[in-house]
Image (cartoon, rainbow, N blue to C red; front, side, top):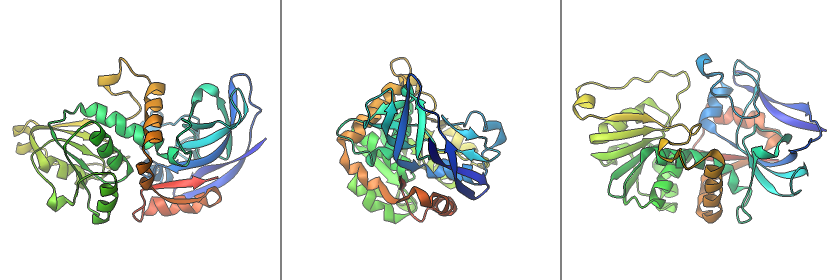
Length: 321
C-alpha cells in the first residue's frame, strides 16, 4: 500500500512524500484520512526549525517520523475513517497523527467519534483538549473575575469552556477588534487591551507573545494567578517581575496538555479526557465558527508556508483529503 505524507524538509520548506504502508496486523487499523487540522503555533515553530534542542525528545508527537533537526513528519490532528483492520470499517475516528493520506496504527491509538459529531468539526479536538486541561489547571470558582488574553482558537475555546462552567465575569482580550464578532457568536464578552478590565482574579494567557503575558501581569488583582497556555519555542520572554509582582504575590503557572491537570489526575486518564472533549464537540455546533479556512492536502506545502509566515487572521485551518 502507498500513502502520501507531509514532511518539513528544511526551515520554511515542506513537501509531500510517498510512503509504503504495511498491511494492518492483529490489533491494528488502516485509517483513511478525511481531514487534518493545523495547530498553527506549534507547527509554525516546527516548520521554521525553532524547537529548542533541549526539547527535541519531550516535544515528539505520537507517530512522528524524523527529528526536529529536520526533516520531520509532524502533526497531531487527524480525523479519518477505518478502511481495514481490527475495527468497524467506515467508523469515523480521531488520532494524534501527522498529516498523511493513510496510516496504520494500533487500534488503541484511535478514538471513535460520537455519531452526532461531524468529522469536519472534529479537527478542533486537540485544541479543545488543551483548553479543557487548562481550565482544570486553573481550578476556578464561579464568583471569580476571569480574563482570557488571546482570541485565537485555544484562547476562544478556553473562554468558551470557562463559560460552560458557570463563570459570570469573563472577558476575552485581543489586539484584533475583528475577533469581537467570533467571540460574540460564542456568547463571550470581548475587549481590546486598552478596554480590558483590571483587578482580575485569574487570567488565562494564550496569545503566544511576551506582550500578552506582560499585559496579564498588569491586569492582575492581588494574589491573582496567571495560567499560561502559550508555548514560546526558543524565544526568550522578558517580564517586569519587580516590586509589583512580589508585592501583590502574583503567580504564573504553566499549563500543558501532555499531562492531565493535577486536580483531575486521580480520576481521569487521557482516553477519558479525549472522550469528554469529543462529546462536547458533538453537542455544540456553534464551535464550527472557529474553523474558518480549508484547503486541499495537495496544497499543504504552500498552505503551511503561508500560515507559518502570517496567519492573516485565520483561526483554525482545516486540510481536506
